[in-house]
Length: 636
Image (cartoon, rainbow, N blue to C red; front, top):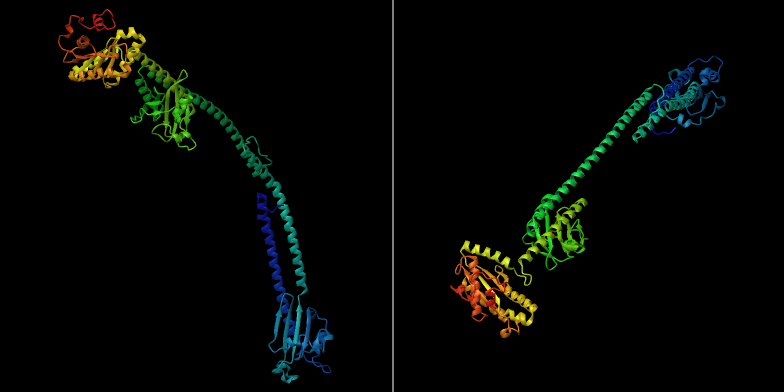
């Protein structure tokens, strides 16, 4: 059997059998030691008594006719039981010679240990585990009859050695046999106890432990083997009952877990449905918001407000492709006026890359040194977090880029990419519609030949300027410009040359006006300039500068014209100096222009009272596009 204490049976075996064996061995040893002491003491007492007895025989009287101390000789030669226990018994003379001895052959010899025995000193007795040695001096007052000096000197010595008694040896052998018997009995007891514990305790506990280990691993269908009605059997029955209860609970848990999984699946579907509804609601709001206006600026402003608010995006910007083909920031959240108008080349940064590739560019960490975007810049003014750039593509044409940024790294989920891409598609459609509307409006308000506002836009602008001048009491002037001998140019060089001349004259005039002034094509070869907050004298000086600029422009040289160059005639009228109403003010400028024509052309004339009443001019507003108009005939 193994010596380990890893089972209850072995623990009980060593805790019961081993202490019993040790107790038996200790008791046997104790009794063996006490027997030794008792035997030694008995041997000592026996030796002392024998020595005293031998010494006493010297006091016995010697019968007449016999040698001295004849009783001692008889004692030494007798077969008394008392003498048989002695190993050595000698009567020694003072010089160590043997006078009497139980061994007759030693009488008359010197004792081998005479020097030790005859050494001066008192009598003594020594005992050990095997024998007792006694040395007793002879020579007392009773010996003075034969030995006159016996009173003061030693006349002899009794030397006695008594060995271990036979009974003591027998007792020792008996105790040794008992020791062996105890060992054998202890071994048999250990084997019997171990066998009993193995069959009645260790094996049942091992079977129960095996069942418990299988149950611990999750096998709740296992059952412990139950034999008998002892405590281990009752423990196994209780364990089986517990497993049955656990099995029932496990089945209930499985059912509950399945129900929870179904509920969780339904909740996930509900959450996903809610997310989809929220996304659709956002797309609907974006579509409704962007489609509710066709003004591009208003559209960009609404998208910039809506996206950060509904998608919780702290940084957002819209870039549109400008006329030079660059991406220009048109709207940004939060507002950064210094960033609006900033441009990015296609292919530059994440925004430029998205526009160039026409696909989404997502950078989870713009500080990642392995990212080229981290080195080249992504969104102006930002250098942390994650950036998402989605191009706005319409009919394979990039209109711009939507830029989204969050300060957290990798903060855009894949489902958000789909939603924001849909938002970008909605915004692209709306931006394209707004651009088309702006272009249509521009076409309706712009002269297609010269690119300046047409007559409709002119009178809308003139109406605003008149209202502003009337409200604030500031002057406002208009210039009526007509190209001299334009019919002769068309007849000589053709209408294509006439159209080119109109564009060149328009370019010269436009290059020398303020941004607040308005240049428009009035009709035919006539243009009108609206000068805000300009007095009559200043307007006249402006007109002169414009006339000289046209006359000196090298691109306007025309051999077919009188003087070999294109010239213009200009009429000036000012509000409120000349008129307080829009229609009358235009008529005054037209009258001044008619006066410049009468004066020989290539001149500037400021309106003065009565000019509109000239007999060769039709009164009221003329229609320059009408060739039958007297004004047109006169100007031609």
